[in-house]
Length: 303
Length: 277
Image (cartoon, rainbow over all chains, first blue to last red; front, side):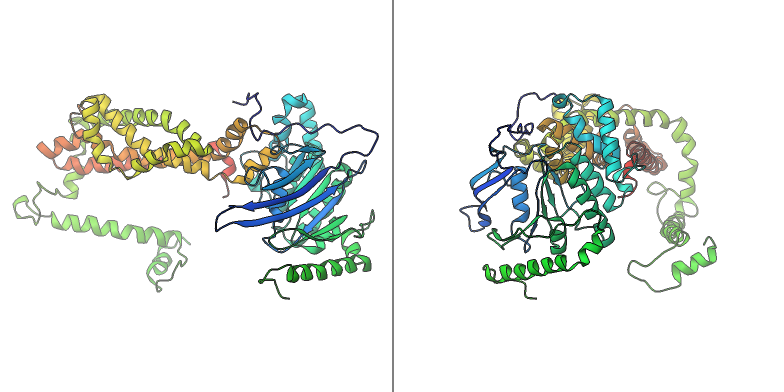
């Protein structure tokens, strides 16, 4: 059953090899004038994204963390899904999406994704869930069972789920389920991590724990992260940059590149009380309101 | 908690409350009431000497007469052999339906094109009155054993196919999308995601289908069955004793209930992770 050797449409390809050229390395992600219109040419046509152009450089040894906020229905999720290559939104109506210089052809293990919905496979234990991706890619990676097992154990430990290996998802809390999803995704060492409101369904203390976990892991995995959230505080806390998307049609209405970075060793809550952080949140929030009101929507949320 | 007086008070003492609480005992007590009323009314209508009854014993024998006719059902009508014969037909029909409905249902649930191909037929089938399949299968397969199995198989198939499709449908897209980002191919997605996650739903469909299909056994055995629960009813209707009709109905319900318990047990031991939903 699992011996489909031919490359089917939508079949993920192995991650593009890192270009070794001594010159400027290729950007990790490039969007060239990307637009996405749903149901084009019908009365129900809806422009989710319009003329989206940007380029994220590959910094050696560390990826960038981009926090994305915006009013609901602004195409944030469409953006992530396009980058993931899901068939529900792919290909874009116009424009080009490149990952390390190559156009994307469907989902792939170089782009991991964590969803807001709990996505742990319900019939597998925590260990089996984390092993899933490693086992599926076994032919390609040539990993032995012992290596897979130790990788899985390490990731379970890193996300703080040691002792829960043999539990099924229904026995876990929401936060623990998201930890499983993160471990399962990071075990494949994706170069790009897409997160679609991963902590939105969690209660506040759990949310803070998860943010802390993500910061710790991010340092280690050095991936480029795109995190969509409805929490400005979260975007500012986690992001190197913050993007504000405009309401339909979605565009990057404003980019903040001067976001204060959490210093090592300072607890999240303490850092979030600092003036620099509060100031950044205020600036983003003010801009959020401005973008929301000026960029066309008659239904803009009035505060 | 288990004080009967308290339970009675619970059951009758207060007003009707929408989705009100009810204790276990209160529930049992209330559930027994209509049964007692029905059997009481039945006994009342069939009391006295045969000639003076409100309803003739030829139409409705008394509860006592029904119960005491069990030995004749067991020995003369050979109930146990009939149960085996009927159960065997149902199992064969169920198996035949499964062989076709399972792969087709999975394929329809997984691939939109396969679904588009067969959906109109499935809709037609779901509105088809099952009893019309009796003459249909008779003209196709004669009146022998094959017709009975085929009739049951068709009835099962018509129920199972859309139920299987729905079970696959209910697997959330988020699992598929997650699996794709983890590197699965299409076929791996069908096997490791759709089929794997839909398993409890598929077994649930089989359970419901089996329960419904089992009750069609009477239709299957209406004509030219040399043995079976349906055949006992037909004989009892023509030649009596009437008591057997009522007893066989009880037997069919009892078997359906017990088999359903078995399915639940099977489901629980196969899918321990479904503990909390």
